[in-house]
Amino acid sequence: MKKRENWTSNVGFILAAAGSAIGLGNIWRFPYVTGTNGGAAFLLIFLAAIIFIGFPVIVAEISLGRNTAKNPVGAFKKIAPDTPWWVVGGLGVFTGFLILSYYSVVAGWSMSYIFKAINGFTPGTDFATLFGSHISGFGVPLFWHAAFMLITVLVIRAGVVGGIQKVAKTLMPVLFLILITLVIRAVTLPGAGEGLSFYLKPDFSKISIQTFTDAIAQAFFTLSLGMGAMITYGSYLSKDDNISDNAVYIIGFDTLIAVLAGLAIFPAVFALGFSPSAGPGLVFITLPGVLAEMPLGSFFGFLFFLLLSISALTSAISLLEVVVSYVVDEKGWERKKAAQIIGFIIFIVGIPPILGYSSLSGFSFLGMDVLDTYDWFANNIFLPLGGLLTSIFAAYVWKAKNMMKEANSAPGKITLGKGYEFLLKYIAPAGILIIMAFNIWTTFVG
Ligand code: PFF
Image 1 (tube, helix red, strand yellow):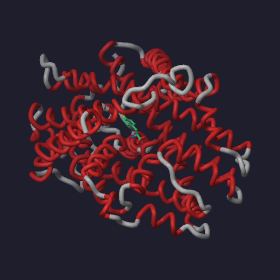
Image 2 (image 1 turned 90 degrees about the vertical axis):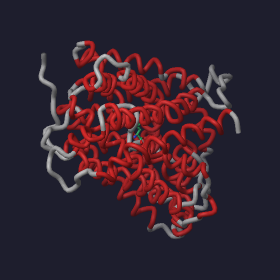
Image 3 (image 1 turned 60 degrees about the vertical axis):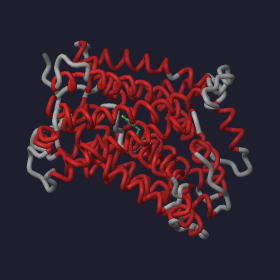
């Protein structure tokens, strides 16, 4: 059997894991959720969610991966053989599969907008109509979805070090430089202040239970938790690296990029007299409109959609790697073949979300189209459920003390103790359970 690959350095792991964490969730979701949920007040709650729930879960996942050197299914099996706990890993593999299928469709929109920007964003264009006709086509979105999946497959085929780590090491610094350029451009526009105030001015009157559940859901998605991505990446981590220190870096980079993304978007939106909109509308409709009015706007648009596509690629890689590592470890498939076949199946599963804007537009689940339905199940059910069961598993089946021994095995700045144990055993599971119950309740009952 081939020896399992390891990241060649600690930095390689941090960049790959940060690449997984930093994605569409940071660049289009975080800024909007923050702006409409009370700005800095939301940011505080989000930070609390990250520290009290995100941190314990990410450390548990990385430790589980490193201890077992296995994919998510194999990791649970190794620690609790002959029990049904491996199903939690299986749920993770399934969730990775599901998320990647629509994530790639959106990433495909982003790639096609790189070219729209190169051709120039013309003032006076009706960008809402342009976006509507773009996504309601079939051939064009399908082409970009295929192109994005193809690139993702090529990276995974090339292996952990030659593919994932190399791409992360090359693209993460590029991503950071582009983002800084965009922030500087945005905050120096005359009238940028209004956008800054929309984004960050604390407004505690906007805080409700919903704010807390939004913050926890965002923490899960943005840190790639609850589906085994960090178990998988942790499984390639050397025994000499300190897990808690690494987790702090990953969380720190992820949060920094999310906050910066808002600083690149809102000052520009307000400076040019636009008002912000939600999700895809913000980046694919409002922003091109803003850019069309700005000097060198098409150039900055090119940079923005390149940034968005890069962030999506390094996340997509981790989603595919979860599924591929499973069939490689458990089913004995060869990596290249696994990447191609799984990538192709995910491409097919991504077709209904595309058709949801045309021939399947009659589909509606609680008023959502196909893509939003996939996203709803992933975000509101599968990721929190995966995170909940993983934290219970680490705390009570594997046992917190064994998990912490793994995390503490290499010297570092942080040594986990009683405080961490309390978070893992009580706070994280309870917090997750509350948001799940609340989300299901508000969707189906209230
Ligand atoms: N963290 C990614 C984002 O913020 O866009 C999304 C994601 C990637 C979720 C990988 C889960 C995952 F395993």
